[in-house]
Length: 253
Image (cartoon, rainbow, N blue to C red; front, side, top):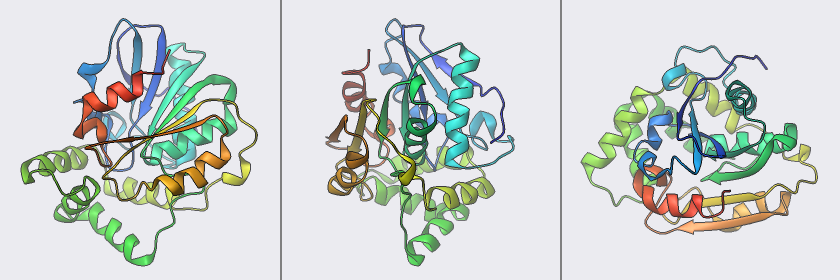
């Protein structure tokens, strides 16, 4: 792991401190529709880009889920935050689980939003080719986003999300992160953990299967809760930000 002070966009000055990282396909701007739902008197909400994304698009790697976890702690240290809640979306949900191996004493709770389990995502060769195409071909990326949000949104809506994804990422970095979150993972390193682990998924997300998440994340972490959001797919912060806000903030103090 390499170290640097990880900068973040911080919204609010409240006593409940949260660091959130988006997943594989976008930078912190994926949270833009969600930001108005943040109560600035209750929360200090830090939106951190993974290395190679957004405000850190020129940052050196390694581009791994483990490095994202390390950078979340570096961000907390830079902000002077001792204990934090962590929101990890998709790929970064795997990173949040890594923190429950490496830095449990710093974590008040984790919220895993449409997460990849600590065991990594198991994909076949056809799926791998499709994801690689989405990295390099805008039309393929738009098709992937449409599938991951249930195919119910307008072409303009999907194109807007795709444009945000493209502007905040680099193809070489996307390929590196894909190798990380589809790798063997670290589930065997997880020990007894009492930290609350909440999984929030959208009902239209084809990759978030409740039973599979119960059998993996639910089996590893005893203080586990799963919530399914109606009207959402893989990007609830963009799709239905008020629905996500109600689910997310109801148990964070």
